[in-house]
Image 1 (cartoon, protein in one colour):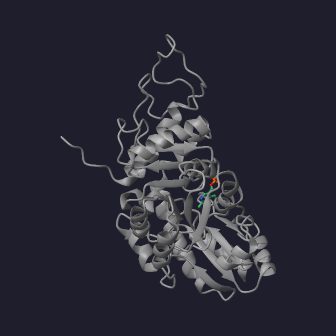
Image 2 (cartoon, protein in one colour):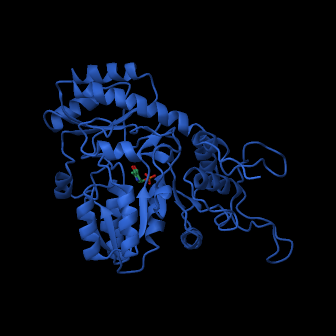
Image 3 (spheres, helix red, strand yellow):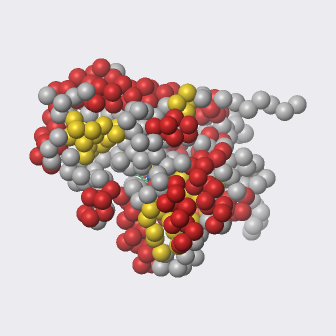
Length: 399
Ligand SMILES: Cc1ncc(COP(=O)(O)O)c(C=O)c1O
């Protein structure tokens, strides 16, 4: 008898999990051992050395594979196509190793500043990668540039950090197939609760698990999940060969965070929608960027590809342009009290930051300007506090 697949909220709690076979512990123990006994050289219980095999990390990796719908079984790959790393950037760096020296990567123009820095200032030099940036929110441009530069990998992020552009994931998958490129979606801003790239024929999903998956701003990590067996095989080799794995304590915390991911995301989305609407009416705010507002240029696309149980839901990130420049932004950011002025996002607590000075300072200034990351731009990560308290805090900061 085939079992009915569980809903996503249930998969966050049970996906890829089973009680500990030795003790029956319901939650996976934290296995700190770096090494495992062998009966005779090469004869062991499937665990040799913790960089290659760790029970706690494996539990998280199976869960990630399940909630991103890798569709791979234990026979295809030991952790069903899920791989956890020491940070989001460690995950991205390992993913870039799927490319050979001199190959071309086509990258969304507005990506996390650290991804931009890793490509432009490290991998262009050390791996000879040719990096072509393009605004993939314009599908016609994506198609044209891909057919010109013949990339081996297409890397996108949607919604983007920080200008919340939305990219058509179906189009990226289609273009990738047409030119034989591996397609990757950084799904950090949406989380698997809202957006399901592997179900839309994307090859690899990447996350900074530091953000919504961990959810409590207390652990740094990253992951890759693939639905393709041959890619899983390469990533398994790379993860071990490069070695930037997630440690067992961090894996445990991240797995614990994921258990409440579905209910947290619903609340993040509802509060962000309400706060984005309120900010749009405030005279100190020049413009609000939020995919859930009808004024967002890709609102219809976002409503199609970002959904909770079929209901359009637009995430917890809101970006605003204030009237004025750096002085006005600085004054506002110094005055808010409940919002913490800090980098990062996706935690239960609300955060606020200035991308041009903080998260995206590593993006060359001319590129920042071209992307609209101006001195007037402020990024908000809406937490799960009562939204009225958050609005009161923003009001006293802006008035
Ligand atoms: C969209 C996105 N991708 C990747 C990263 C990098 O992740 P980490 O900071 O965990 O290395 C970040 C970090 O802010 C991010 O926002």
